[in-house]
Length: 124
Ligand SMILES: [Zn+2]
Image 1 (tube, rainbow, N blue to C red):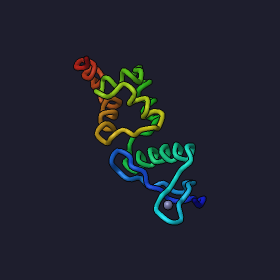
Image 2: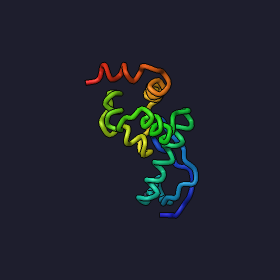
Image 3: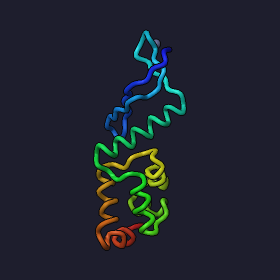
């Protein structure tokens, strides 16, 4: 395997995100690429950042800020949006990206008075 740095493509929410300058090991005889664990984690984080930037989505920090302004825990916001309990935690940690539709919903909750009350009224 040869040490290389270069562009790699990562799937994020069904899209393909290209990330530059990724250290990896490349087989000279076939298309196989292997990443060290730390490099793989860094690649995934960078792909999430780039996916959000490309789609104009809220950043992890913006999601945390809007949630804290509303006085909600990560789990409570997840339940209000009908999501799995760890979903907001993964968004804020940069381990997953919200879909475009959920980004719209987050902005509604942030920007439209009464929307949080509405979500609370219909949540279990
Ligand atoms: Zn090979």
